[in-house]
Length: 309
Image: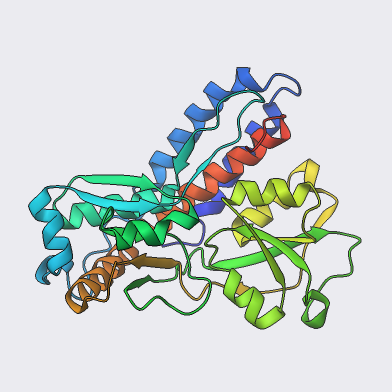
């Protein structure tokens, strides 16, 4: 996948940002959303034509647990879900994370099954797996070691780079200056482990990236960790002129994990093949680009007075 996938998106949002009215957030949402949908549709073409590499998942048995889903006729996948910015007083409706939802749909397609996504709060995920209410769980990167029951989502070459952003006057940089400092990031962020293990930061996790951005702007953390493409876009916005990107290079070791209720070699081998094919065809990059574009749009909404619930 070309590294230019995301910058092309975010460049299109700059004239949108300049055209937004200062005091009337509702009037521009419809037109802006149409523009965003058009941009999202274009990324779907980027991964085509890559061909199959490795073992195709349809040549492997999916294992007893996923065969049960086939017998039932539906694949049930637990995903992260969170409310998007909305006007004060409006109901906060949780929506599935776009990458989690895209992956859930892809796994259903590989199995030839319709997919039911179930948004789960962090405290409910283990019980949902254990009790059999979901077949699989997609919930971002693990906080510590890789889960034994499941398969890792390979890191994206195009979007595996992360960055830190902080106020210009704050004495932060490489090495020990970050140790013990609070850093805002999304729950399940692939940058959490390298930040903690290499720099010793104090991670403050939030339900989503836009919630982490809102918390950072509110002063709850001294730095924000996000994808390099989004950080670079933020720094081009007028409202972010008092911030800077720190001289810290972050690489995501993995994009996340797909969890099973219990270790099952056949299912894990099938998942590994499906995830590798999903990444190689460019679908992971396309899903990450969609999330980044939606996040940029949500940041614009925050600047117009909409709030995170």
